[in-house]
Amino acid sequence: MTFIQIVDYETSRPEAVNEVFDRYLAKTQGKRTVSHTVVGRDRESDTHFVDVVEFPSYEDAMKNSHLPETDKMFQEMVALCDGMPRFTNLDVIRDEHLNTLLANRMFDDLAMKGDMSAADEIFASDYRDHDIGNPMDKRGPEGMREDVQMWRSAFDFTFTLDAQMAQEDYVTTMWTWTGKHKGEFMGIAPTGKTCTMTGTTVFRCENGMIKEGWWHYDAMRLMKELGAMQ
Image (cartoon, rainbow, N blue to C red; front, side, top):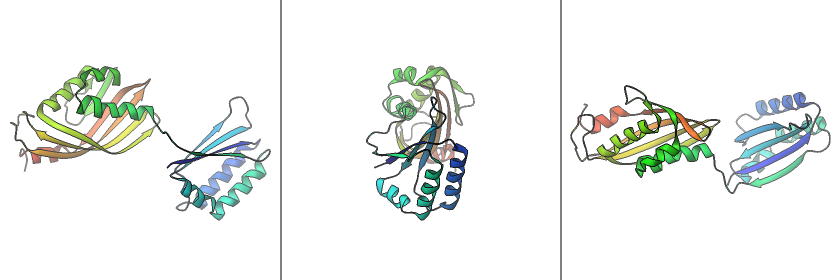
């Protein structure tokens, strides 16, 4: 279970605190167990800061706290603070990145379930799709409906989402596609073969909609499995 520690503190020397953090990162490279950190400054007070430190688990946080470098960093930080920092320890019980949920609707609702109406809820009206399999970019929800319908008419398929990362406005998904060839595809008559290919999709989101997408996948492997290439 993901564990988060929130450190709330006051300091009139934020640059010096940052230097302490930088030295700590350099000295603990390969040893610290922190997976993500965010430092925020209060808009209402230039001396009020909050650090959000994420660990894969509580146990990992304890391992990190027992590093001698961690204790030294904390003592140096306290010396630069106006008073003792305040700590809040949290077990994460729900973690949702809304852009990730949006991207997953493309794979689940639109592609696999065939809910074509979902395209209007997922893709912006000026969406632009960059696909190595298409000579020209598809545009808007209608373009994605056309593309998905083409694949669904040629294959009964599923997506397995192997890994996913969300950062700022971007969601990157590594996936495995498995499909049974049931209809004509790029001039190839139905073969009844079950084919597999891997790929990566990057979506850029804006205002709660997917604005742009990039698809990279092993098209050559698919064509070989369909017998169109040696």
